Image (cartoon, rainbow, N blue to C red):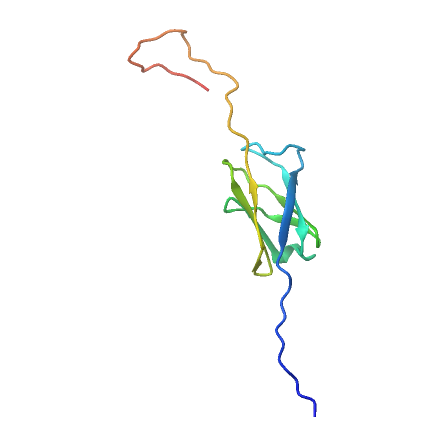
Length: 125
């Protein structure tokens, strides 16, 4: 007689290897409209089964294949933000660190060039 022995089976976990931005830069502006491309393995081919977050903010997945995902990067701020991927409820085996650019001030106007030392003047950035 043949005896069947139960076997367990699982798919390999998604693994992230790198990322790039549609802007060609390594960091995104805080008010970005960039597309984030993540490379790796075991992503599957159905974008509806993939979820991606950047710093705990949803990054809606646009396209998926076994080695590449793209998502619509949300506006944000900060550095050392984790890019996390889940495929069909299976979390990735690792995450990647992402950073938005630091805000910068392009100019300022304050009306008069001097004012009282106690404050109270208006400064527009």
